Amino acid sequence: MATVIPIHFVSSKVYPRLTSGHFNNWRIAFVVVTQLLYFGLPWLQWGGRQAVRFDFASMRGYLFGLTLLPQDLIYLAGSLIIAALGLFLWTMLAGRLWCGFSCPQTVYSQIMLWLERWVEGPPNARRKLDAAPWGAEKLLKKGGTQSLMLLFSLWTGLTLVGYFTPLRELAANLAAGHIGTWEALFALSYAGFTWLLAGHLREQVCKHMCPYARFQGAMFDDHTLLVAYDSARGEPRGARRKEAANLATQGDCVDCGLCVQVCPVGIDIRAGLQYECIGCGLCADACDEVMDKLAAPRGLIRLTTQHALEQGRRPTLWQRPRALVYGGLIAAVTLAMLTSLWLRQPFRVDILRDRAVMARETQDGNIENAYTVRIFNTLPDARQYRLAVSGEGVVAAQPAEPLHVPADGERSFIVTVAADPNVLARGSHEVTFLLQDAANPRLQVREAARLLMP
Ligand code: SF4
Ligand code: SF4
Picture (cartoon, rainbow, N blue to C red):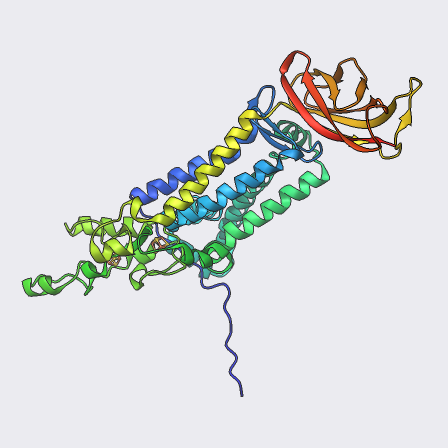
């Protein structure tokens, strides 16, 4: 009979012990900075409106002084290319430092762990509480932890909604006791995911669900930074004995197990490089404390590279052409995007020829084509635009008076262009629309369109 091997998707719960040291300080700093940014940004005002907001209803995105329109999707594409190249470069240079310090899953798991520790106590107390039968104390403590986690998750969900709808209005509506249906659904879904992934699944997400953990090995090389145990120095491991002969043959690892107890994913770094390791460095902090007590040099577990562990030195950037290629591509795309943003005009124009009317003859014998001209004003004040149309045979364009577009809005105008049939042959001809800001004619946009001569 075939043997059925059970698959345990969720392994036993990890109760990591607290530690202190540089890596832990960096982790705390990253939690604080990333959360200040996440929760603080949507409250920031810039030029009388929310500094960062993506409004699907009006199809506009606000990034401080910049207003983005659907035509600016190229910048989103550019940003995604930079982010992808940046991830390749960062992973190649620094391994999993992103996972250990700034990945939202790690950051939120850390916050949930703090809440859990605050209510339920240190690892041993939490382990006992989990094993204990349900009673008043367990109900109170578990209820307290879950309530805090849910409140925090809801706050993250409402903040996320605040990136797509004015957050101050949302907060006022909430205070008044009402919230829109889609806002509520969006906030509850995100809160639910935060609570489930960071509050409950935690390291299981990194181990079993995150694709980045699986494919990043392909980006590593011998010079990639990683948190590693120096086995040449640490082995043979074992408790220290006083005899001089033993000291001479013994490695620096006293097999205290602290590096395993503090690990948030519950692995033993001494077993070598493992895909579960998120590179948080907490094992290095714990081990440094042990080394201090033994008056041995720190760094038995440290941030290093495979090459440095074997050969004792690190290469320069020039010896890593892949890094230079990624860096060069990032610089080129960034420069192209910045130049384009610098040259970008604060208004955009879409021109659509009226297809319902082919072309018609005017009283003075010219041939007239009609167009819908849609102007998008991205400035926070109303603007007037002057229109001019040029091209072979073009004799007039209407309306001649300035076109008024409201602040941070858009408006469509019907524009007619008349051309002399004695100059133009039958067929389709290119004409150019020029729109200038009436108050500042240097701000101008040119768009090409086709004129039909029947
Ligand atoms: S903390 Fe350091 S000394 Fe203790 S088991 Fe880990 S590697 Fe060995
Ligand atoms: S092995 Fe060390 S660096 Fe890796 S996850 Fe565990 S504590 Fe963090």
